[in-house]
Image (cartoon, rainbow, N blue to C red; front, side):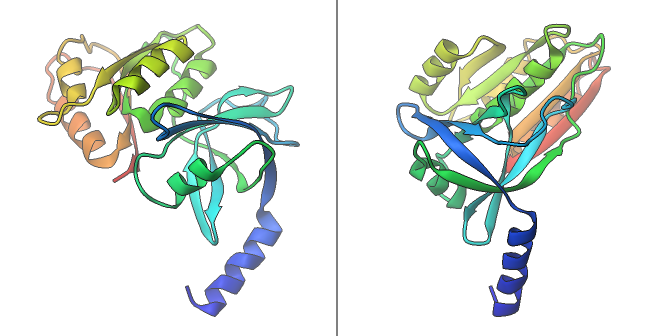
Length: 228
C-alpha cells in the first residue's frame, strides 16, 4: 500500500472507527473456531430488524466483516462466531484475541437477510454461517420456523454445535467427494420456502443453481457468499 493510501486509511480510521472490548474468547477443539463475546458500548441494538455485519479491523489497514449474534441490547453485548480454519488475517486475529483486548470496527450495518412473515426459513451454509443463522433465529423471535443444515469439516465441531446451541439447524459432515448440503436438500420439500444460503462462494452458487432447478421449488432464495 502506497504512502498516500495509508494516510487516507489512517485518517478514515481516526474519524470513523469505534472501539469494543473482548469479554471472553472460547476456542472449540480443535482451535479453528472461536466464540468471541464483545461489549460494544453505545451501539444501539434495539432496532435491528435484519442480520447485521460489522467491519472489524484485523490487521493494519485490513478489515473483515463479521456477524453479531446472540446480542443483548440492554447490556450492549454480542458474540462473534469465527471460523479460523482458512489461513488469513481474520483467522490470525481471532486466534490471537484474549479477554480484555480492545477491538476496532467501522460501525455496524444491515444486510438484506431478515425473517419473512408466515414462511419457514430454510438455512444452508458451512460453519462460517453459524453466526448469520443464529442472528436470523433471534430476529424470528420464535414466530417463524428456522431450520436447515450446516456443514462441518470437523466431527468435534459438529458435537460442540449440538451441545452449545438450541436450534433447528442440523450439523452434517462435509464429504470429500460431494457437497453434503446437496444430499441433505434432496430430502427436503421446498414448496413456498424462503431459503438462505451463505458461506463458501462456489458452494453458494452451486446450491442456488441446484435448488432453482427443483420442480417443487416455488419460494425465494437469498444468497450471500462469505469466502472463496
